[in-house]
Length: 280
Image (cartoon, rainbow, N blue to C red):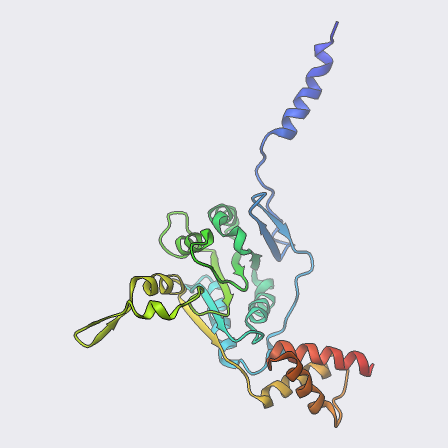
C-alpha cells in the first residue's frame, strides 16, 4: 500500500517550486547597478559597475554640465527630465551616464541597464522600482535605434509619455543613440512634406519618427572632435595609465586614428591603452 502521508511533504515541496514567485528585488543599500531581464521579470545585480569620473571626460564640458544638472535635480527630489544623448560615435555618451551615476550613487542614485529586447516589459520594471521610493533610478538604454515596426518602439514611446503604466517619480530614462530620431530616415519621406501659407509641414512618416525623440525632455548632442582635442584626450589617458607621452606620441596617436577611421574619445582611450602597455 502507498503511504500517502509520506508523499504529501514531497508533493508540497514540488508544487512550491513550480508555483510562480514574485521576483526578488536587490538590496539597494548595497547594490548600485542592476540589469533588467525581461525573460525572468527580475533584476540581476551588477556587482562591479564600471566607474567613470567626470573629470576624465574631456572636450564635452557643456554636455557634462547639462546632464549633471539634470541628474542633481533628480537626486534632490526636484523635477527633472528624461535624457536623450545623441551624436558622433565614441564621443562619450555612455561614459557620461556612467560618470553621473558614479558621482551620485552615494546619494541614492541607482542605474538599471535595459536592452532593446527588454523594452516591452518596461511596465513590469516600473512596478518593481516604484516599491523602492527611498532611492532614485536611472533606466539606462544604450546604443538605441529602431528598424521599421519594431515592437520596442511603441513600448518606449508609451513609457516616456502616454501610458497609464509609466514610471514613478523616482525613475528617469537616459538613452544614447547615434541617431537623433532613433529611426532610419529616408529621402522619399521628404516628398510627403506640404507647403501651407509658406510654411513647411512634415509628412506623417516624419512626424511619427520625431514623436519618440520629442518625448525626451532633454536632448544632449555630441559632435565630432578636432585633432587637438583627440590628442589631448589620448595624452590624458596615457598619463592616467602611468605612461609618459614622448616625442613620437602624437604621430603614433594620429596613425592609430587613421587606421581606425575615426578620431574620438573611444579611439583615444584605446590608443592610450596600447601605448601604455607597450611602454610599460
